[in-house]
Length: 221
Image (cartoon, rainbow, N blue to C red):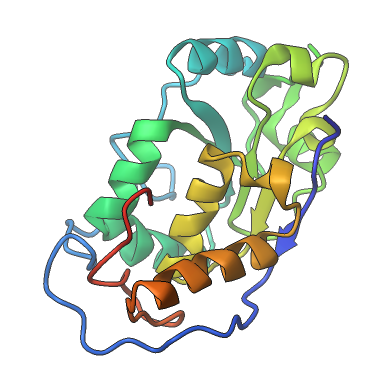
């Protein structure tokens, strides 16, 4: 199917506000990520890219996962809360590691990258080609090489997140892609509204703006 392109900003959805969250795996309890020598945040669980997106996509598919690019830069104010809040929540990390291979690329980097259509260029050139403007940008690539045939990463991406979102939205974006929610509902916000109804039906309270996930999560998420 044709690639679905979406730019997500923090948009209010009518949801129930939670009470105090428990001190458990739904809070940012993991160690704070350190900044590496290259000036960017380090994560040990990042996928070791071959710098060939065709190879990485094929290998990721064999693992039964999806490939996503974290586009960042050395000075990135919105990357800081992503690493210091969202990516310190154990459940968020579990969701990502179990279902995705994450490649981190520098919007101004000079490493040579092979795009999905076989074109070789620098990270900076690829960022420009893909229209990467906001940091961080999470670019979710298609499931297979067949879906990407003859297309650039921008043309074949299934979803794009630009900027920082609080943990609730951030977590469910990964579930949206994992479950191929974009095939049924191209609008992430409408899809998330349906998730909210599930929470309400189960009388589970939550807060869109909290620096944590809800203490309880319905089965399947």
